[in-house]
Amino acid sequence: MLTAADSRVEPAASAQHSGPSKGRRAWFGRLLPFTLPVLLVVTWQVAAQLHLIDTVLIPSPQQVFRTLVEAAGDGSLWENTQASLLRWGSGFALGGGLGVMFGSLVGLFRLAEQFLDSTFQMLRTVPHLGLMPLLILWLGLGESPKLVMVGLASFFPLYLNTMAGIRNVDRKLVEVGRVHGLGTVELLRRVVLPAALPSILVGARYGLGSAWVGLIVAELMGATSGLGFMLSEGQALSRVDIVVGGLVIFALAGKLVDVLVRAAERRFLHSRDTYQGV
Amino acid sequence: MGVAVSMENVSRTFRGSGGQVQALADISLEVELGSFVALVGQSGCGKSTLLRAITGLDTGYTGRLTVGGEPVTGVDPRRGIAFQEPRLFPWLSVEQNIGFGLRLPTTERNRRIAELIEMVELTGFERARPSQLSGGMAQRVAIARALAPRPRVLLLDEPFGALDAFTRARLQDALQDIWLREAVTTILVTHDIEEAVTLAQRVVVMTPRPGRIQQVMDIDLAYPRNRADPQVTEYRRVLLKAFHLDRSAAVPTREIP
Ligand SMILES: Nc1ncnc2c1ncn2[C@@H]1O[C@H](COP(=O)(O)OP(=O)(O)O)[C@@H](O)[C@H]1O
Ligand SMILES: [Mg+2]
Image 1 (cartoon, rainbow over the protein chains, first blue to last red):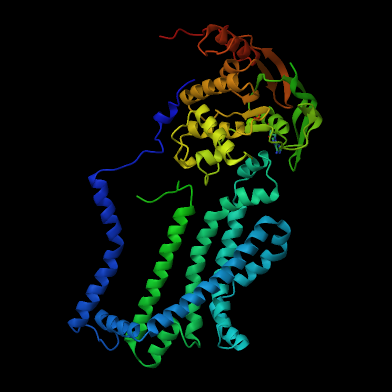
Image 2: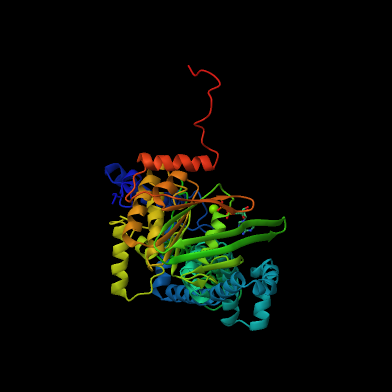
């Protein structure tokens, strides 16, 4: 039998790049994203210290940090962050779960598409952030309007991307599944869903982002806990440092979750045969 | 010798918005158990349509088509197929792709996968992803996946058509070795006359519009075969003639300096 010489002609799976210049580039690449934020904070601090900016309107990073440490000390920071994260998670699970469910239905069954899709597409054009006053009137000031708002914000990204993911599954791969004797259920589980997963994960990332925004809007309008509450409280007390501190925590938490989702994507996304930039 | 695949007056007409296309007209052919048959013909002559009918992917044909004596009414794991594109599942590794259609207990399953990996010479690439493979390697995986459940009939639809000439020659040799070892009935669709002559015991020539069998030619040469063998070349010349592609009688019209 012939040897698999063709495996030697073209680049093989085990090919690894290494070398000192690559290592230095990796370090540089890892630090690069942090340079701009650090530079901004340093400039901000220096400007405040030189009295180039009015520290009553724009507190220095040092002041914001001190306020956050205080809030962390009396437990209110953790309490508010926790409340927001909890609403974010449960609202996303609810809305995102429904989005995947309906997206699958509509993606898989023509009848479901004809019945549901045009209604969903119409509802999608309603700016959901504007629904908050209505939700408060209907559901009061408790947890439910906030859950509904976060759920609404996560529903559509997952609905749309799940449906598109399923509709974009390569028919040729489905055919391979059929040739191997898979029935409908097995075909969905072993071919259609794995093939649609990358698209669903993209939807999850968008959904988490839009849910985060929906959450803050919900919390700004009548809440007694959460980061949005922290912002409105700071505004009521004319404490710009509290407002800015709340925004900083908001941004950090959002970034953290984004990093986690990206890690999940890397774990599940198979063919990284896409353009990665120069 | 028994008959593996039998076709009697198999026809297939596609009806679309643009009218009717008769892709196959009265195809009658018997493929013997364990034999190697090649279907050749220019593109559009119905080779894929015939192969899809035998696979059971297209049941819109008329006439009588049986595999192992049973009429073909749908797909069956006892018929394995590999296409021109490898069609590997990008989220599965090489070994998972090969084992995709295997319904065996874990130990037997792993043994079968290891056997196939060795057969298609991909040792060391068990855990590689399809995106990391070259075209030739991916096609090896696709053939191994089709062979995994030990099909009675192996159907190949231009499996090497997209490969460069060197890789194609190597994979043809590999396929010949696999067939000699496994003795599986093989139907190879190709538009490469040399490929058909080098590999098959019988070459079926098809013509288009509508797709018909023009002639059937037995290649009486011993295996293993060598594509550089003068007898192979002679058969190739005869087949080229059948396609009116033989230019040995052409008269030079000017002197080439
Ligand atoms: N699903 C289909 N619908 C309509 N026409 C088809 C379909 N499949 C094949 N045909 C037509 O049937 C003829 C034979 O096609 P095919 O079997 O793919 O040829 P080959 O594989 O020999 O190149 C062509 O004219 C093609 O356009
Ligand atoms: Mg074809």
